[in-house]
Image (tube, rainbow, N blue to C red; front, side):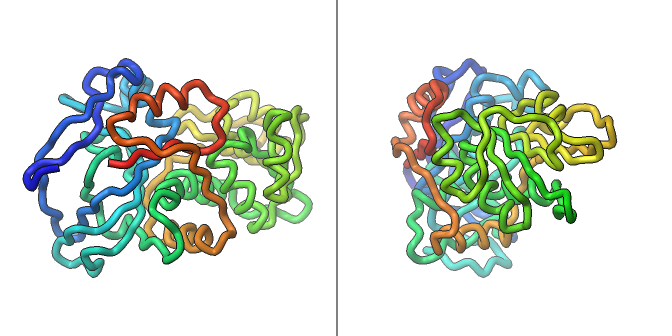
Length: 305
């Protein structure tokens, strides 16, 4: 990074990992209410693989004329603040850049974001670990908000894809909300799911009060909900049609500075776990995508500029 440019990973014409380019773009100053963060770590998520593959371009969610930025969450250090911002230069923060249609992302040396969207990283939590919290943690919290509170005699929640990154947060947070949680996952993940205090099943039968469909089973997941129950998916705009009195919704994760601050505090206190599989330099973003696409990895790849 020079004084006038910085490096960021983008996709011009989507076509999988090989379409990822690292380019140099001009440094700009933060505006009112914004901070510029020198990124220390950025998590690689399944949604990034979908962007690079063109899945969201094909669905009309991305219409960037030149290039699309990769990466949703980050941790780093504030290196400039705009007017009306009380975050001092040097403050360690983490944050989320949500939405698909954007020309910048967190696979980069720096990023400008609203100060309200970031949260201070507590002492004792390193930036690599902190970078794995925003997207997955906030997705879990916002799924719980869509589910609402459990009712007396109606608190049985099935979490599909329970061994994934969002599942690790949701299994724990849902129990705190009063749900009786069961994780649906492969047999090899039973010990992991139970380590969160949740029940486990490899084959779920219908009749659940609520289903959080992290595995995107869609109609298969919807069919597991009892009449009058609740279904929350992870594909906005593609929720199964509501019938049998079942309430349906899909999470569309958004930045939430105060919510993230609470998640980071609980992570620093050891209540929530982070899972880093491997750390790679930004130039190896394509390698991280290829490795993640093979599956079987429980933790996350994290890129460092």
